[in-house]
Image 1 (tube, rainbow, N blue to C red):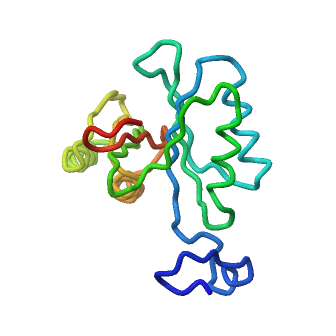
Image 2: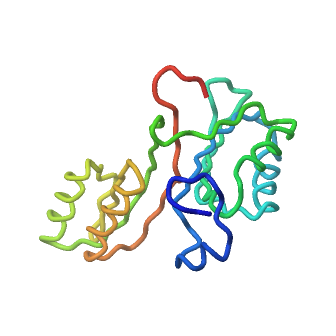
Length: 185
């Protein structure tokens, strides 16, 4: 049980023996909901009651002003994701749920970094931002604020490059995702 290539779930003991409870089985759910108060609370509560930790969560309007799109990512290794999606379908304000396949999805995240810079360091940090296709969105006497968009790996790589200069503050949005091609979500 739990050998590579099998679909059988691993037991908690097997996960702990492997040295980590996280297995990288990340699920990105795109949920279309009615734009009404309390919907997000009910959805988050459903995940909490099932023992899921929501890793990222973003909510925004869709092309219809009466509907919102919730994108959330969870690690589905400890609990089967299909059980929680069936219960999501039962919520009255939930219209459509899609577990997005990473190979067929475009996903991005936005991050803002406030980095300490003085004199020659300013040019060096600005060059790093340019390499990562970042935008300088604010410049102060002793700091710059840089906007980076991309996948989680790109944002983590940028963070590791600017941290030695003095990372004052960092803020990330969480992942948003959309399916590739003409598939509907």
